[in-house]
Structures are given as C-alpha cells and as structure tokens.
View: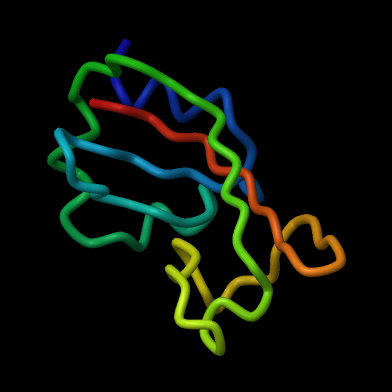
Length: 93
C-alpha cells in the first residue's frame, strides 16, 4: 500500500511519524502533514511496516540532562507522577 492511501485510515489529531531508512522524514499531527516540506516525494512510497509507538519521557528531562521527547514543545497525551507519554503511529517506508 502507498503512503498516500495508508494515511487515510488516521484522523487529524493522530500523531504520525514517517521513517525512511533510519531517518524520520516527518513527525507531527496528521492535520499538519500538508504543510510539511518535501514530503510529497514520499507519498507514493510503499509502506513496509507500521507500529503504534509509545514515547515515555521524564517530565524533568531537560533539568536532568535526559534525552528530549520527539516533540518537546507538545503537551503529552498522558501524564503520570514524574513521566509523560505520547503515542505515535510510526510508518516505515
């Protein structure tokens, strides 16, 4: 299935991460994908794999010198005592 067709199964507030090889070519909400630069070249690529990927980070990642979330400016979908979680629909091309 082509990426263009595969994206139709998601809704606008879904977080999408598109990976080509070992490089993420897009990370963000489906609703904003139309504004992404240079993504049109990947729309006819074959989808090889799909994974719903949870991202769990410590709330104080910056203060503690830990790895940053994929989108540190975004509000997490879930929050625990000292962790935050976001769910990304990762599409591998």
